[in-house]
Image 1 (cartoon, rainbow, N blue to C red):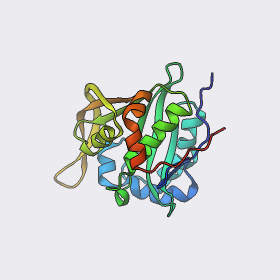
Image 2: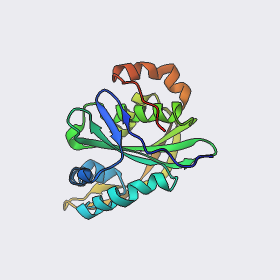
Image 3: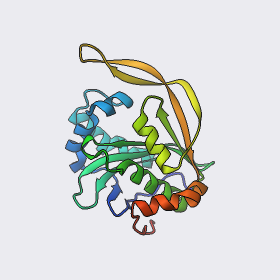
Image 4: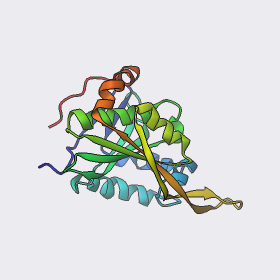
Length: 212
């Protein structure tokens, strides 16, 4: 049984999802220091160039080679500019299920890139890799992340109470840790077959090449 994802690039008409490259380091550093990303993720803060170098050169490739999942940079097709990231992790190869996380750079918000990249990943995961479940977990107060889940057609399954530690700004401009709930969502192959076709057409999906 295969227990690693292939080394792939996934394309839509507007985006290319591909492995991280050295050239991504400056933009990734800037993206990870965005206030919204700092608030809702567990990455170091401040996020340094050294942190980005470690992610691009070591941690992101190990996600795939170690069998936990895959980490992909999301870039614009025309400009090749980094606009976000999609990560599959906590992969269960026996049940063919995995969990997705997604980020959008502050300079690329409002374009629908998170929804587009997540749907592209789901399509590849279900149709090319034979997976049966994609799970999303969104902090209860992160409405933007919840909207992405809803737009993909994911179904809300319930709440994990007090299951996440987010960051919140303090009066002096610093950060403090706060506990919050996680909303659990799932996307199954039939969700794309039933309602996902309209999403795919809306974002102008290009045909996917076969991946070895």
